[in-house]
Image (cartoon, rainbow, N blue to C red; front, side):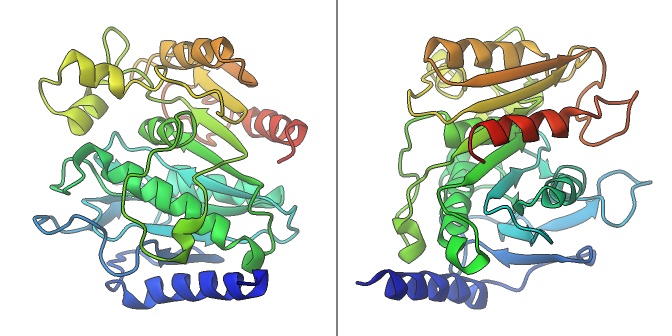
Length: 321
C-alpha cells in the first residue's frame, strides 16, 4: 500500500467513526473555533451493561457557559482547536475531574487556546469513567487515551502536523491518565478496530500538571483511588496503578508542575514521579510553586503560578516539540 493510499484509508476510518457513532449529547454550544468528534467507530467497547446517561453541566454553578464538565461519559470525544499559525506539532489534552467527570472547560478549552497561540493543534479528550460499568473497568479511560493518541497521529497529514511531534498534557486525575499513557511500556488495552489502530501508542513529550500519581498512602488522592480501584484494593493493585512504579525507559521527556500548598493532591505525587523518571534516566523538569492550590489551570497570579505555560513551551521547544 502506498503512503497516499494509507492516508486516505486513515482519513476514511476517522470519518466513518464520526458517522457511525451516536449523536453527541451536548448540552452547551461549543466555543467558537472548536470542533468535536467521537473517537470510536460506533459505540465505545465493552458497554453492554452500561446504563448511565452522559451529562454535561457547568463546572461550578457560577461558571460561564464555556466552563463545563462531562459526567458518565458514554461517547468519548476529541475536541479540536486549530492554530492560526501552525508550528507542525499537536497536543493531546487530558482534563481532570477525579475520575468522576471531565472538566473540559478549565483544562481543555482554556489550555487549548493558550497552546494554539503557540502554534499547536490541540485535541481535548472527554474520556469514560472507570466506575460506570464498562467491561474494561479501571482500564476504560486508558482505552480512550490510547485510541485518542492514535487518532491524533492518524490525523497528522490531514491537519498538517507531524505525527511524530504529538505531546500529551494531563491535569490532576487526567495527569494520572497521561502518565499511564506515556510512562509505561504500551500494552494493548482494546482490540484494533480500524486503520487508525495501526498507529503506535507513542508521544514525543508529556506534561503532568498537579498529577495524581500514587495510589498508596500517605499522599494518595482518595477520591481518584476510590473511583479507579474501589473501596478495598489489594496492595498489588495499589502498586500497579501507582504511576511512579514501572516507569519505562522509553518514556518521552516529561514536564511536571505542582503547587506546594496543594492539599487535594499533595506535591509529593510529582516528586515521586520525578524520582522515578530520574532513576530511569528520562529527561524531566519539575516546577514547584509556592502557591496555586489544586487545579490552578490558567488562573492569573497571585491565585496561581501564571508563568507555567511559558516554562512548558520552553521545555517543549528544547525537546523538539
